[in-house]
Amino acid sequence: MNPIVYAIPVFFVLMLIEFGVARARGRTAYRINDTLASLALGTTSQITELATKLVVIAIYAFCYEQLRVTTLPVDTWWTWALGLLLYDFLYYWHHRMSHEVGILWATHVVHHSSEEFNLSTALRQTSTRFLLGWMFYLPMAVLGFPVIVFIVVGLVDLLYQYWIHTEQIGKLGWFDRVFASPSNHRVHHAVNDQYLDKNYGGILIVWDRLFGSFIDEDDNEPCVYGTRSRLATFSPLWANLEVFAALGKDAWYARSWTDKLRVFLKPPGWRPADVATRFPKPAFDLDAAKRKYDPPLTSFETRYLFVQFLIVLGAGTHCLAVADHWPMPTTLAYACWIAFSAWTLCRLADHGRLASAMELTRLAALLVLVPYLWRGS
Image 1 (cartoon, rainbow, N blue to C red):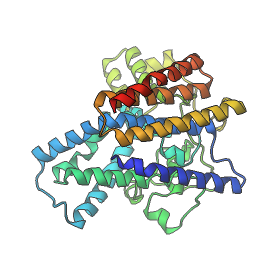
Image 2: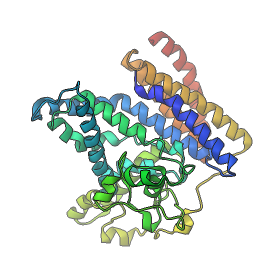
Image 3: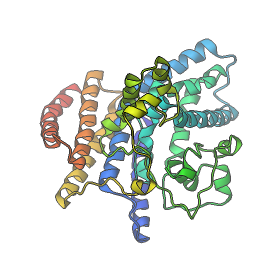
Image 4: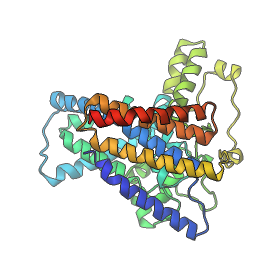
């Protein structure tokens, strides 16, 4: 069974604790629409990975079998310790390049699209990481780390990063100087000029100190979260495609063939001069970024979205739990309904065009899906 299934209850217990702590302090840690979007992106990512993770593992396994220079024993503690250390080092460079190369930013931007910073933000994961992210970890295969080591240390690195997405834990002294921590990671998610593109570490922050990308959180400069090009929607579909679409548009209109390629390889925000002239974009304004995208919801809409999304989350967890046992067509149908449901509920939170029609379609599809799943399972 997918180990994430076992982690999901822990995620939600910690989110409830964070909510309670924030409320006791008179703070607002969560907005229903933003949280729904984060959970929708997390659900969609996990559903997508039912298929894509097999591709990544297959590539790693092939390189391990064909290119490794040695074979490290799987039954010694130091293989696992070195594997985790190396994975975290490679993660640092993967993460850093995802902020410095346009096409990699397109696969990572989803995680930064929330204008809040809470534990649900940690679950706001991309569905396109499999496209290019795997290549950063192939040195592990070449050095002889077995496939199971690669999988497990990658999961450990990912799960560690959950708890550092919170504003409810302050600075931690010496810990902040060695490890990725809430204070360090708040800086990473901020769009303030002084914080931009800093603190990439997954477990260890020492990589940032070694390679010049570290900065302390400044108590006099509160973090402002989100991206410099506001998403302005809760749609998980557009969150995953927005930057790809922007890069494709700039490449299409660029007159130089060199610029058409450079659009994808230059840092995020870079645009060919001729394209920037013909299709100008406003300069980033920090004060404007402080005004959050927050379409109002009635009390009925809030309750409806909350209940429906609990159902979808339960279905997503169930799908992950049974995916290894059900026939692929049955699992695929289930996964498609879950992904469409997440998109539809977020469109309702947006008050998006055709959202009501999408919701009726989603509910009607459920009437067909339930008997199909009953027979198919």
